[in-house]
Length: 365
Image (cartoon, rainbow, N blue to C red; front, side, top):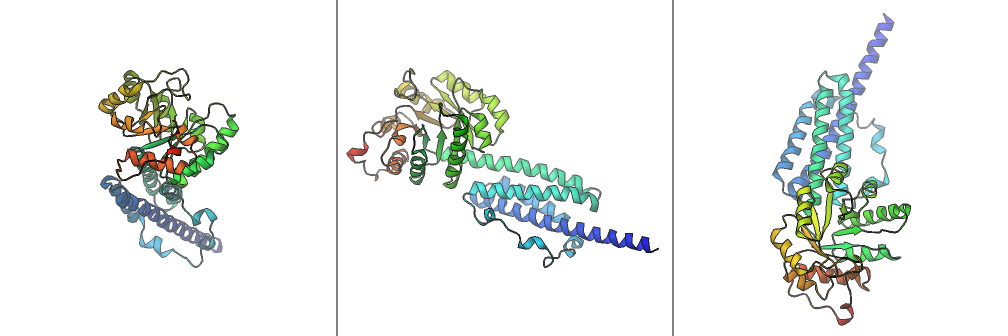
């Protein structure tokens, strides 16, 4: 009899503990979803994504029974005193969303496993909810990146120099929102470390970070996407590896390559080289005629690139270019912040923006 009583008491204690675990993780999942929902509602004004978040929260609420709430013991919970320095700050909306998606997914996994001890259908229900949250994450983060891409007018493509980080940060301070790390010669260890630091820097300023050519490095540093040349991996292969939420760009030099990139599912294309440039040795200039063609026929965001400087950017704009990519104009600039602001002023058609002083006019793309 005593053994039976002990087993009964143990069972009651285990059940109470399970209820506490379920209650805590239902709270955690619902709070994380509410944070995500607020951005869907007020940040991107998406009725669809807001409604998906709301429906998920309501489904979680239907499982949050009075019995589970009654098991709550906040004063006796040792976890309330635990924290980590990374929880004290958020450097961007992207990081805030990513952290909360992770929080929701971890909580749902706990609910899925412990729910099997509480209710016969709870484990399966939360497994399906977890998959729905994975899909929501892809949709929202992909939307965020695509919106940022569409809004970006100036694209900074880097080249290896000693003061790389200083130049990139100065450009970011000038309003730059899109950076590509391009380095064809440095060893892989250095490239990986540089890409990781640049990615963190770009995300700190809310800018997109793209890696040239290297899918492996882009994936390793959690870059926003990759840019591919005509001799690199096909867009379809990159999409399979990176998934739908990452950005894939493609270089094009003529209408045929443009059409092929669009059909393969590229998110944006480079159009050029508009002028001859040492960054593309031996490559004949495509000229402004190709810019005019892109302005008329391109159905995805595109950036005129190649030899574009403060001296000729208005010619490119006049030919229909609404976005440009530059290399030397910023890499060799004495004042990258001012050059960035000048380019953005021209691309955004701000007539009140003064011309650059004469000593700034010798920059090249």
